[in-house]
Image (spheres, rainbow, N blue to C red):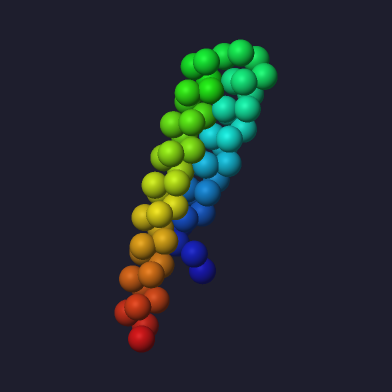
Length: 61
């Protein structure tokens, strides 16, 4: 099972995409910026989860 951080990071990234798109549609620059920030945060969190998964898998061998 993937690490919790990977799942949460992917969800945050997706939410950021939606928020950024909503900001583009409404012309809300603040919402667009928040969406981009959420995407970056989600990608970092996903990467941390991936590293945890790799370490866990390596320790099994």
